Length: 568
Image (cartoon, rainbow, N blue to C red; front, side):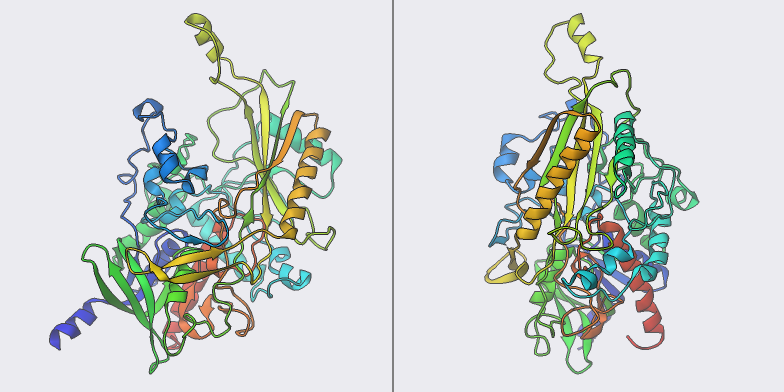
């Protein structure tokens, strides 16, 4: 009895955070800085900042295959091999297809990073705020359910996380893409500027800007004190940045949490379920599979933040059944696992252009051009709902590739870059619907006792119409700007490669149709918060990570205030 009491005491904290990535890192920072003794549970290995990046300073010739995918990698990992960031220098940050299987009822490429920091080590670092056009979209257009918050609720939290993370960008004055707390922007190159000018001359409904990226272009005291430095424009970001120049949980939020002395970081711990106490009417902890000891251990806390990445969060809640929640934790509405969305990345376009062969650029800028959504912004204008943003970049094509010659002749040719080309990428908003859902396969379990996740997520007619519109508009803009050899294609790739899966545990005003309230609390259990992509009611066209960060910081602040009042 005494041993059990001591064990419970040892495993009891003020707060538990499930996941250590984009959202989990922010939850850890905010809760510990507000005085809470916090346990951060991560299912993957530890990745200490700097020392955990083994390939960060390696050169192409240091790799056996010059950094490229070899046939074994392709054969053994057909899903993750389709991800743009997966190569010989980054493979240690990706979940291998064979290690963590899942069931695809419809084709879905699930890209995962199970380690401390999660996919914050691998993200593309593009950050844009939502506006009221996005938060009001479902109510205006009649899809999904109404968001319980608006831009004014999140605006101060956007500013809060931007200042700490560090965001480079330009104040562009676009109503549906609010400006933020920016460091000096990176620069459009000469061909991108050319397209910007031609679009401004031809169109009144769209604007090309430099991308807003979570890179330090002018580090402030808060960054320097944390050991972070200025972006070196190496464009090797997916290997982990030893300079701390881009925002990751490893270089920023987790060290801040550790500095308080209030964080206990526990890697290699797979959270299986949330413990619900019927007598107390609240969650009291989580059941965890310890990979090191191969045992299942309970941990206890007054408040629980679930930030395990969207689909894993869905899986955890679906697996957390009890007499009170037989269909999954907090699932009184019956919508848990449903209304999953993603971003539509199928379409892309490109072209070449003459006349700029005397121009080049400095460094390998880890950002690019961005055209905010221009379809159906203030009102419905097309035969499809919502719209798409466009990202891309221009560069000197073909430098050092497929060059023939020998000796001095070859060296001379290699010093001259090829012609300019441009690339444009669709980032469309999908419509969350009940028929896009995830569930659990109760007959198949992974090595850590969790039922395999089943994905039933696909495209619809709205996606097809939106993709068709992007292809037409991209061709038109490039033609008007004088580009040549224009191409525009639909890749037909499976959902998932956008790596922006969202929903399944959506926020909403009505507990009968949603899982979470305006503070990211489960309607049915006020001491459990969900703040990652699973909480999204609709998808927007913006890269979602900045919104996850702001929602998490806001929810953590609310949780602590409610704990002080005795409401949690």
